[in-house]
Image (cartoon, rainbow, N blue to C red; front, side, top):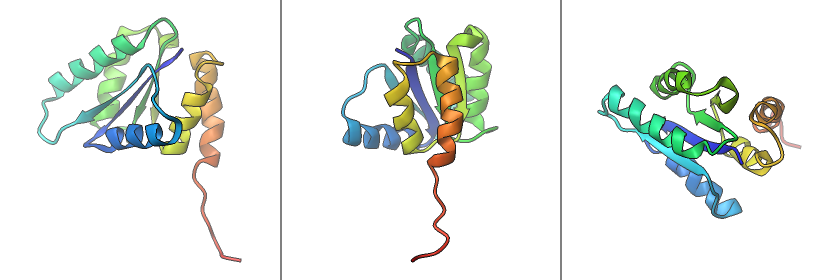
Length: 133
């Protein structure tokens, strides 16, 4: 099973995991990490690296980060050098439906297949209601 790690500024990642568990129950091989307001980058880097290593049990780890180019993304990207590229993928920007889709599909697909699937699924996870009928 592909491990999943959700990383964010503040408690967003914790809230997503809590909401996920309310909807589908307890999940295995999943963790969240939060960047505290005054946390040192070096300690954060090590914290998320340690977590990623725990989550990768042979099928890789999918890392969700809250924003492209921000500290959680930059740290996850830096840590990618310590993994085989086929065992570590980052998705920048996430929402609850996308994370649920990843959880539901991660046992049936390889990490690269799951990422490709999520690229398509992401289109359907945000809906703009233009008018009311």
